[in-house]
Length: 113
Length: 112
Image (tube, rainbow over all chains, first blue to last red; front, side, top):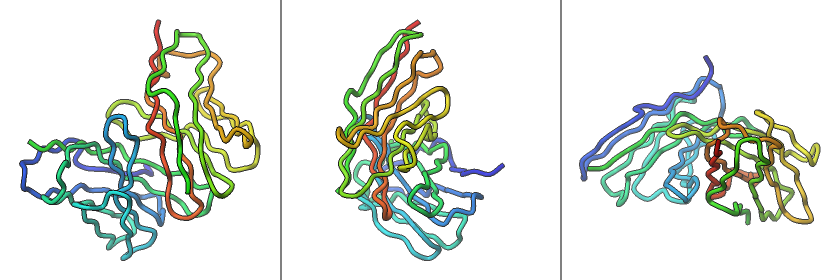
């Protein structure tokens, strides 16, 4: 099936540890995005990538890092520098053009203990 | 600059009643507008999108939205609510370059 796979679905982390969230897509979309979702705040953009080997910071990039070595993959690392990492993280992809919508994965819920 | 405002973080309707979820946007360019639905602990699913072809847009599950440029609005409606419509709904605008801007969401509760 075509789609976006995020893993793990649930993740627990101790303070001071880095953690990497996986996002894989087989939609052949060029653009990929990472969003953070907190209750009552909508979706906030962390990083995005429009082509392989290139990515840009979004509105809340501090404490996060990404890579885009393959078109299909856009992993997000939540570092120990992120002060409040407990959140729901969503990966999305997009076709080109102005009318293209975002396609979302099922999300990963990170809890810092 | 683009932004999206959703009025009402929580809306409650009875089953069979009209659903109206409000969205107002600001955009310095002709907007491309979207409505998404999210069920608990899941990703977002596209309901419908406005891309300037027609001001009244029909989407999935009986939802529709009307683009009103004079009011800078893109409200989501459904004539008759169903229990399965209970979810959170997000309005979004595309900035014609590289970003979507999302509203803060409206949680819809459907009472039996």
